[in-house]
Image 1 (cartoon, rainbow, N blue to C red):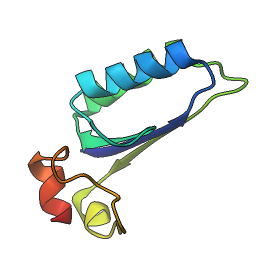
Image 2 (tube, helix red, strand yellow; image 1 turned 135 degrees about the horizontal axis):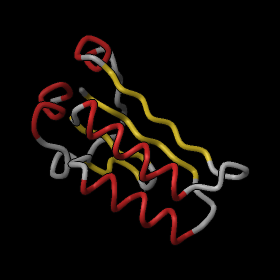
Image 3 (cartoon, rainbow, N blue to C red; image 1 turned 180 degrees about the horizontal axis):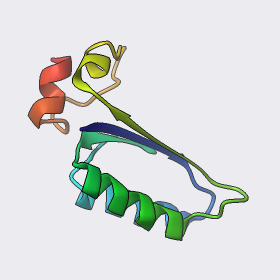
Image 4 (cartoon, rainbow, N blue to C red; image 1 turned 45 degrees about the vertical axis):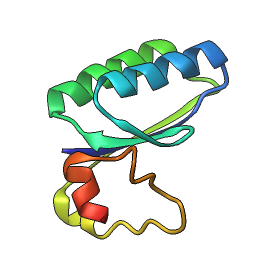
Length: 96
């Protein structure tokens, strides 16, 4: 499933660890606090648990948006929204 993860994390160390978890899951960084990629439901669940353990629920914000192929095809990216050198696989095929 195609998945967007967006976050606003106050603590630098937690933010760095969450970015590392996203990369380890095979997601691509498309902006500083935005990741996109194709992961399984199980991988999404593991990532959600990892993120939950890092965040402060009183101050931090995390959004996980799983999307099917039809919704992804309707996604609009303007300007330099995605770096073609960083984003590959099925995700790249949806945009380029």
